[in-house]
Length: 313
Image (cartoon, rainbow, N blue to C red; front, side, top):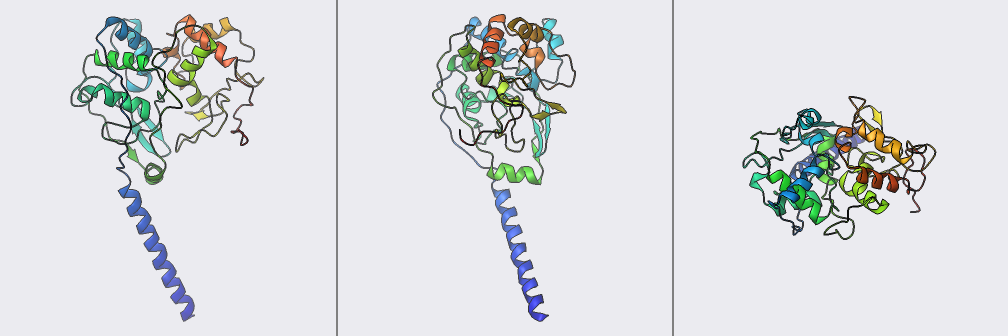
């Protein structure tokens, strides 16, 4: 009996030491700093560049859907400015994450950062302070030209002074942040510019590198953001909705849609109020852009809805 109690005592001590050690390690890794190159991207005051930035911000890049608490669609239709002052809450399994103020305010917005710092944050997921961003904005392979246009438009807006709450993580979230969250950079060479047309190639650029269709229409781990399913095969549950399959499989949403049906549906905007799909931003895309996206989606291999990643790939 004494031997058993002695073993139990030392087992308890070892477990306690391990718990304390892991806890200390997790806390020490909450403020990890990372490095990343600064893209050769600069903002411009050219009206054409700013106009292109506005088209991206309120269209395929759908910035207003996360970085504004206003009814962007109503204000946009009235010709009024939409404040991109942040504050939208992502209430996730790992904790509460708030979108940033991206107006040019010098104390609470992006006015305190250089063009290259903003460009690095978007392309490499490294904040001005060296922290790693959660991969909510996968503009890693967005062209230099389009990245410049986006930053130019944001610079041209009225600054809004608005403090945003700090992100707060639960215990699981702190562990994830300590060991799993790292900057995500480009896949391959980033283009300086991309030719705008209605081809499937340009549709791929919009779908993957600007509009981030693949980010929602693919199963992924909501703890880390890692993809666990085939791209565009859908099956991800978001806010009570399961994202549709966009591949050419018969289980796909677009299997029976022709090009005009595709465009018409986007022009109708959001029909279900709680749908996480940024319909009201995407409906502002040009016909040529929507045709390009349609052609690209119709070129995809067929996968069953929610199909896991194929290990042999």
